[in-house]
Amino acid sequence: MSATLLDRRPEPVARAAPPPPLGLLAELTHRCPLRCTYCSNPLQLDGRSSELDTETWKRVFTEAAELGVIHIHLSGGEPTARRDIVELTRHAADVGLYTNLITSGIGVSDEKLDALLEAGCDHIQLSLQGANAEVTELVGGYRGGFEKKEAFARAVVARGFPLTLNAVIHRMNIHQVPAMIEKAVEFGARRLEIAHTQYYGWALKNRAQLMPVREDVDRTIVEVEEARERLKGQLVIDAVFPDYYARYPKLCNGGWGARTLSVTPAGKALPCHAAETIKHLEFWSVRDHSLADIWAESPAFEAYRGTGWMKEPCTSCERRHVDFGGCRCQALALTGDAANTDPACIKSPLHQELGDTATIEASSVADPLAVVYRGFRAS
Ligand code: SF4
Ligand code: FES
Image (tube, rainbow, N blue to C red; front, side, top):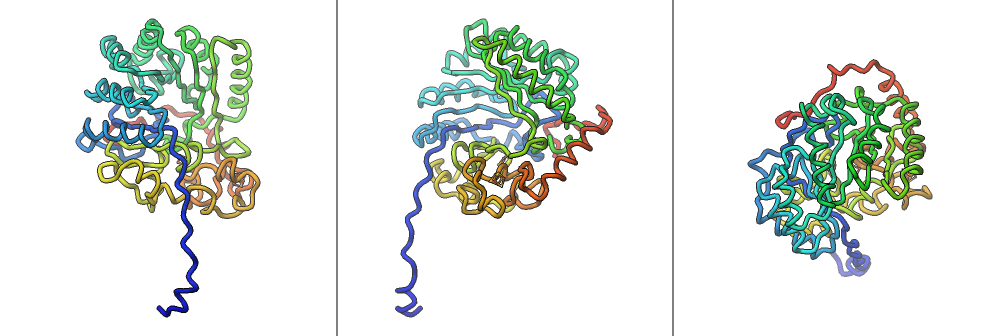
């Protein structure tokens, strides 16, 4: 290249380092006793033999704390299926992370619960599939699940510990929203999350059986509002309503590469839980890279960070810094291109089609036999 052309080359622009993440979702294992129809884990699960070992997870937790992460969510699958769960919890607490255990409550003995609390677990989030045994078993595919969850919830509260219940809502349990609110009060939970199913991973497979009709969704909005007012000071209720009936998309995960990251059981670092569905992305592993390098440099985190990757109508939209174009994984699943506007947005050319699909699927006759239960080996 001639000196003249070199002279014309623009000065390299120093790229500002992204602000540090606030949260880390540590998916310790995909193993799980439940077989939930709405599971958001990927179709291809990581097997036990590919899971990170104890020392690697501990290093990742230390690096997370050094990077500025405040909250760590110990999740899965069922995180307590790991034999080292108490040791990992202790390490997370020791390095100063606020430690939230996300559990089905199944298989967690009183002794293990005591050990987890003693190790420094700060908060427990328990999944709720229904308000009684019948619905819980229908949704989770596990006999006796409701009784075990109830016993676990009561054991947590009896120890004076903060408990959040997380209820994923869909057509099979939407009629139980008021009953689930009452159960949360009865169990002594401080917080209840009413979160309508996000159709990624396994849930997308079951979408036609899980999609609720709009009238039922609208009714739950009223039910939640009424309960929030009535239970002020006693129970906090968070609610996430379905994208498919929305006018604008959600700010997914606080924005791509903006606030949180996930690490899979086998060690891949992802900008969001479902990011592996975007096949062209290159995910770095915590086995080979530090969390700080992954956050700042890895191609997958860079791919959709900020707004530079956007297309119209997002590029010129006044909401582009509010929702960052919605969910990349949903855009890919529904439009074939992760850089497209999330069809949950009214400005997407596919928005009307999305609403129509939801209406058609929700109006189809529910057939419990057509639901595919999650299986650990299923892919
Ligand atoms: Fe958000 Fe894009 Fe829709 Fe604007 S056009 S509201 S930025 S998804
Ligand atoms: Fe991946 Fe929304 S789930 S960006």
